[in-house]
Image (cartoon, rainbow, N blue to C red):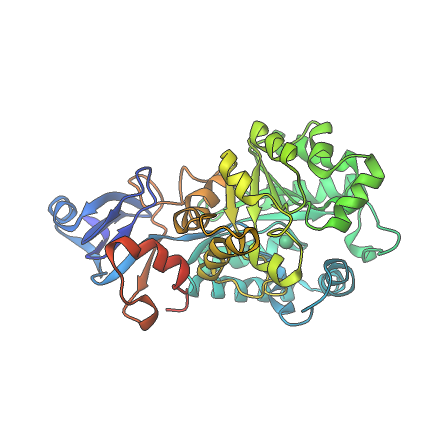
Length: 412
Ligand SMILES: [Zn+2]
């Protein structure tokens, strides 16, 4: 007997063979998937269940994985629209974050979880803010799965100083990272993981970057960092070190599969090769880039990264940057924007877009042994999409994934 039997829907599994199973079923025991297949096969194996979820006429997908979400910025929606990125960060978002209380942080994170749950996201990857134990509390209580980090800044930018209470010494940043990792990593029955965090390159010393990498390796966690986000930020590093961003990180001896670099619009072909050779992971956030004019579609190398086999996950960013947390919208953005700017309709297929919102996003944060696809042995992070709505009709067998990406939305 299974705990839950989801039966009758069209399963878009994202498994190794990328099977789409019509009239399928998923059997779940406790929190794990124990059978996936045609309804008659699975119900023969599991004729009864504690709970039967009827999914006939609906799509059954793996829970979406958002590779980049700032939970603490949920209450900042609308306070920083239509600004250049430097003004957005230094004049609006960092001052906002600097006055947040524990309760503000928790409330912001809870609202963020609510929007994600309502739009089909079950795993969220936060690059870090402050008071992050209160984000972890919200993840725990909401039932979401997610990663939190502490966003280290140990270096000021003289022309755009960061709020004093967010800037620390290198030692202070390492201590805060360690405390967060010890407090929340692998809590909530394994639903919450912690990573080490570096906010963004101009505000990080080379010592901090190297020490964060060491700390992450020592504690078996990953590293998250905004990197190569805008031309101005890459120029700060070029001026400081003589190197472009990825060459700089390589020169420090960091990078690797445990690194998740976010945005990454300002890299060149040689840096694509460094990322491939080091198996470094990327979070691509097309919505924030399109709205904030970061340039990652026009100047970036995302089609080249995908072609090179670099693992790229998809993210929404925050409600102050994108300003939506609907991953269906992000799938449409990533499958459309590169076609437009490169004048090439073959770039970033719907199949690639849905992978970037599920299995590739899970791989990007080294969590694919548990999530990202509907497969036996994985956690039962499964969503059901009601397609009995005008924007899903007609839904041909050959257009299921294109419909999800080009016409779908999470508000069903
Ligand atoms: Zn971000």
